[in-house]
Structures are given as C-alpha cells and as structure tokens.
Length: 364
Ligand code: ZN
Ligand code: ZN
Ligand code: ZN
Image 1 (cartoon, helix red, strand yellow):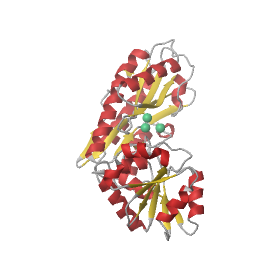
Image 2: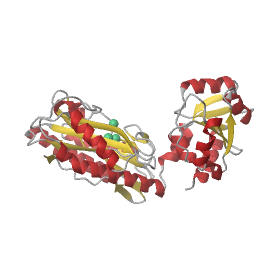
Image 3: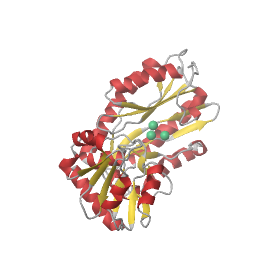
Image 4: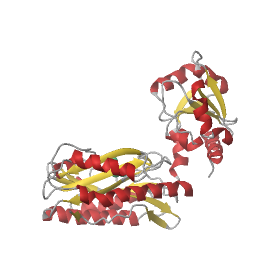
C-alpha cells in the first residue's frame, strides 16, 4: 500500500467514524501516514487530515526543509509553515473551521491537546488511535518484510548471547555488550535490553542490574531495537548457566509446549483471546497458571507495543497481516523466571514465525 492510499483510507475511516479531522503529531502515526520521522518538540508540528479535504502539515518554518526531504509533498500533503511569533493552533483551527469532532493523536503531548481544545472549543475531541490502530494493525507485505528483517537482526544478536553469559559477569556488562550487538545487527536504535538472571528473572520487565551471574542461574534475555525502516524487533530466549534444577527444567518444558501451541493456533478468524487461552490453559494444567502473570502478547510494528493485544477479553478476530508477539512465561518471586517470545504474522492460512533461534533451554 502506498502512503497516499493510507491517507485516503484514513479519511474514509474518519468519515465512517463521524470524525471531521485528524490531528497527527510526530510519532509512529505520522511516520506511518506520510513517512515523516519528525521529533516531537515544544513547537507544534501537526498533520491536519480533514475527512473531506487535502491534508496539510502545519509546521515550524525552520522545519520545512526537513519535512520536504521526507517526500510528503509527493503524497499530496501541502505545507503550512508558521513563524516563531505566530499561534500554530490558530492556523490549525482555520483549516477545520466548523468541525464538530476532531481526533487527536494518541501520542500528542497533553499540553498540545489542551491547546487544541482551546483553539476549537466547540469541537468534541476523540483519540485518533481508534481510527489509526485499525489500519496500522494489519501489515502490508512491505511492512511484513520490514518486520522479518528486524526479526533476523535480533536473531543474530541472540545467536551470540551464549558467548556473553559467563559466571562472574554482571547483568549490566552483558547488557552493554548486547546493546552494541543490537546496533551492529543493523538496528538504528536500542529499545530495551533485559538480562534477568536468577531471582531477577521473576520480574518480567527487569532491565539490568549489578547482580553477578552465577552457576545454575536461569537468565531471561528479552531484547529489541528499531530498524532504520522504523519497524521494531522483540525476542526473548531463556538461557541456563550450567544445569538448572530439575523443577525449573520441568516448568520450562511446559512453557515451551505452551508457547509452540499458541503459535500453532494462529489462524485468521480466531480471536486474540483464544490464542491467549491456548497458552494459559496449557500452563494452568501444568500447575503454572498462577505464575503466568501477564498477557500472552502484543502487536508490533512501528511501535514495540501496539494493537492487537493477545489477552483474555479481546474478542478481535485475527486477520492476515496482523503481527504480534507470543510470549508466555512463568515467574516465581525470589527464585527464577522464564519466558519464550517470538514475533509471528497471521497469514491467509496460518502463521509465519519471524524469529528462528532454537527455543530449547540453552545451557551455556
Ligand atoms: Zn513486555
Ligand atoms: Zn520482549
Ligand atoms: Zn514483547
């Protein structure tokens, strides 16, 4: 799909939602719609997309050259620069005079959203995410290719993790090495590095600490970055230093089963909730239900966490092109934890897995 088509689809979706205009500020939505990777700053940059008129980018005059370089004028977007002493929200309001309902970007700074309200006091404000997430959630082949490249890049990093895990090193030292490898693998940015050893593994979003790796530790390594395309990687493997205890080994075997069953269950028409249930029911039967303390997965694209969320209660049906993580885990406070995470894409007849590293417990 071309960016031009994305803009047209957005306008169509706005019309059916009864929204007169969208205000899209720098962030993943702006990048998705017009390919402009602008930085959110205190000076307003705002793509105004009226439901029934051509889109206009209101931007600081000093950003015009940067915006032009992104090629957005070729998609029919015109530029409306504002000078330092002008009120940019007055310009925006002038473009959508009479609007009864405007959708503001989910990532718009609160201070700007409040100014938007003041500039258009009669207009109802809604979150643009309700319109844009539906479009962003279903990836086109170009986006799937970008996510596939991100998956290969993070696989390349995981392939080297065993060499970095040595008793006596700290999580922080290992994490620093991993961060370098994430960039070396072709990412333009390191998004997060989790090296959760021993009892730290029980905290799913532990980052790194000065804890020294010890023999018999299980180590949860969950890492991701953003590629120059803007698309993100996110992959978890759990490693063991020497032989882990037999209880951990049994739990891990159940986790591996739960993860692969949930991946295999991905099919168009099945609900997000049903994929979560496959992993959760299996772990519950194995006595680990209480220890699986988070949802099974999240969508991924220009953001690491985006729709669709693979969670109980989400009755959204999977469609070909949806990309998301399948990442069950178990967590025992003060003892250990484990997680296995792959990014998958729902295809016309099943699933494509974008991470290829072995999922067996790797003892280093
Ligand atoms: Zn997470
Ligand atoms: Zn992750
Ligand atoms: Zn994840």
